[in-house]
Length: 325
Image: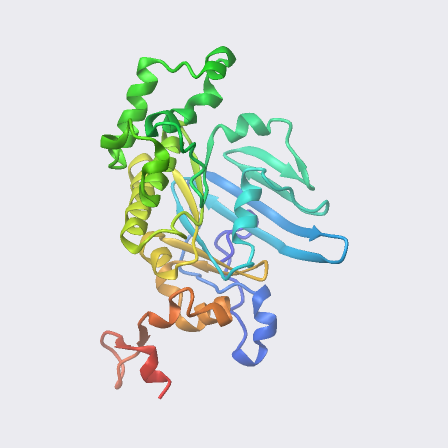
């Protein structure tokens, strides 16, 4: 179901059949089995639209997107390239503003933006939000420990932040965060000499000592090998489950989203077309979301489930290649 502030718990119309798939992008795959969540709301997006304009053309990146994410959730955003995943994520921290006719975005009880205008308290709100970028955004010539300590700058007095004067307690906090993500042995090493997976885990540790209540990750495993990707996603899940931190992660890899995120939101051409648990993310829905990019997202390598003949029993797993014959 679409979890907007006004429609939590209300079932939506299912997507039309393949003959009307051209209009399906504006409809949301329903999941009426999920009851309204009693936890506080961490993220509320109400009617967000975004148009990028240039001299020659304009492109509508988001179309009237509304959703609600509750505290403690771990949500995966999936979709093909250009579907609006990263654009939506950047709106949640005010890095991008919506169109003038867009509604409000509220994060952790504070309004981030409304009608395309940022809140005057945006800097203060951002201190509570950790943003993990695809390219790590570490200073390669600084040590891993110093890079993690940078997460404390927003809450430090200006005279200490200007000169990078960190207290002993702050250094202990950074070491504890590095130990938790499994790379404390590299604390004194220059960040640029570490592997991509280690650098990404350092970026997560930086958000941890920032004290982030909401962690946003934009394609954090896009450039990593499978084992490094697993460690990064496991670290994010650990932060979510043990600390209760709300995590929203933008992913292109469907299998990682299904494995680590109890809730998945699918975007296509700027429209939200799926919102539900991974077990309801069928092959038909995935092909509708990804289209020609299904192979790149690893969808065609997954196993399709069919009901056993005669009814009842467990689903019968059949490789997609068999279905094509």
